[in-house]
Image (spheres, rainbow, N blue to C red):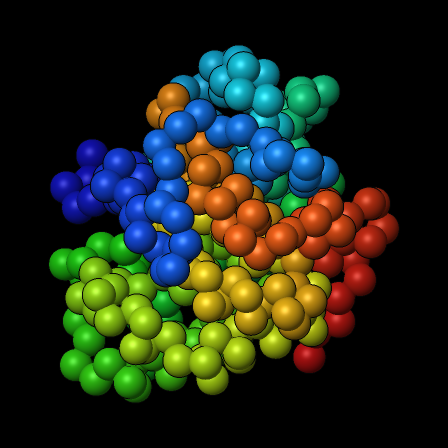
Length: 291
């Protein structure tokens, strides 16, 4: 058992703490069961669900009870990433896909860091419904991996320099990986999180949004982090970005999409604005060209 906090423990603590004021200038997010927006045709899908805490059968029961379809993801990447369950080769990925076959869920993975594709063949990745990734495992100047959700691991001497490099790293994740969804967008380490509105300048937000639109990568609206905030989301909507909902919440609150639905209401999102998994033959791993 690792003594330092895992990403899943951090996410659970973050979700519990909440961020009701994240939608600046809008009504506070209510602590109520997930409900569909009135007169909305947006499908209720939580594409960021991990099965580790509850197990698949309990998740299916929660999904049915809440009326929210789940997209199940497992961490996938090299052994440099430390998780209790980590898919690191084709055989493990195939077994995972088989375990979800025939279940009323979308089958996905949470890709870890930028080298995850060295573990898998394209044909096996194409058997997934989707791939999501984020920029939270950040590559520092010396090549080391920094887990940005662990405040004891993050040291930031120059905030502006970090933000420029972090913005570029987000763009790198979007532009160089065959992913469908950018998860946990605009997350900031604890050391600078209170300066979110100052550090996420329009220019930095624009870089990420432009990359997402160019490469057809959906932007996750995260109900665990209550991110991105409304200025980013409005800019993304105007640019023609697609969106997905993700709770990334462990335990019985999984599928809680209150922040996502509040944001969707504020933005006036419609079904056509929402991410849907690409059909066979059209997945990013099959159609995107990389330099």
